[in-house]
Length: 271
Image (cartoon, rainbow, N blue to C red; front, side, top):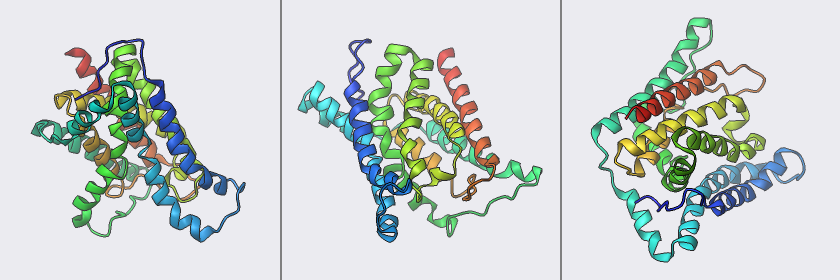
């Protein structure tokens, strides 16, 4: 069940406020450590940073529940959460999610080899752990954000600004929300060009919007799509874990995400 969008002029700003407050306040001590403002124990920071990054990533989900409870009442929370329990969004949607995300990651990994770049080795110990890793990514490694992004706020933005502009705005906000991670030494974002990441966020916003609509508005499909895109990264690595290098693989991946999203969005507008 999507949140009721009864007024195009009424976008729940509190959702964004809570999202950013929850995530950024949790990440702030690690940002301060990364910037050298707070000199705290490096071993302790290394142990706590990843669990805190994951906990901070629940910001959009917590903000969605808070917004629904305060705007629509306590009784609206359970139906909203229950809407994420349906896996019945058709085999074609599942196929396109895995096919599109898998192909984009494969091409970003494979194509630079023709230009003298190394094809980076798989980061998983074995491909047989992929199903477990995929589940972790869906529910704890990024997918959980979609309870808020696509499950809650996307319908408001699309209603007010239209599918194209609404998802462009959401993609930009989504990218900016990640910004503190560029200052946390233990995050992968420190190696990513932010401009490329921004392009990818906009493209994935387009694609995830298509996924939700193609699944008959089953919001779990967005968690599946987001988790799948993240789960493919160590299978076909597109990020060189070093500073000061040109991240060709990553640029290709993010541009492919934009192209995939543009095609998905065009198919929606054609309908």
